[in-house]
Length: 266
Image 1: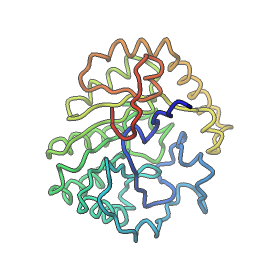
Image 2: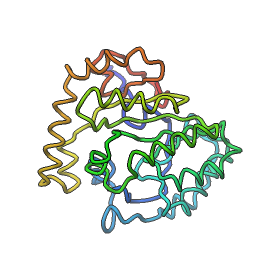
Image 3: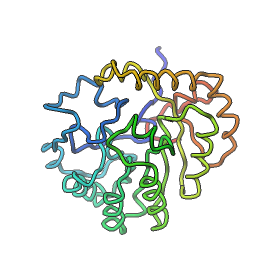
């Protein structure tokens, strides 16, 4: 009998997912959805298109946590589409993990509109670095660090459950990663996830950036900085932090068993 495949990626966090847009304005160079050629997209990836079928779908109560979204983001320009679907998911009684490289305008709207559903919402903001030049290199259309931190602190201050994804970690220096963790953890009620950048060079090529020397050099630097020896050193520094969690890419290196069941968020 073959060994049961352990959950990876978004399935570590949630049992199911919902998306309402095709394409993403954030233009992240390492984007897995953009690299997936099974996801046809007419026109430039950064030109978002509403998925009419998803917008018109009836959303009932689902088993386990629902992650929203996974293949795009929530931006000021798509609130007309994302907010109504989020509301339907919450009104159906779902627990929703809202994952975003957050814009304050979008987050402030969600905080105002979903106060009544606070017990069903966990925000997870992706903040892979505190350095704006690094964020601009890898995620040129996404907000800079101070705006993301404002969103995290704002959600925390209004009583919502908060968490952070540092997957992928975009810094190459261990001290920068630890400093970022320490800067964000005061505004986190749940956890901060750390994970490696997966398939960095392959994703760059698939997404049309294979000839970009600056990105290729940055990707190679990340691969070196995320070798087993460096990951073990980072793990040693943060393993006793009560709010740290490790993605499967790091669990494999440090010898932590991944759960067999999807969506446990552990």
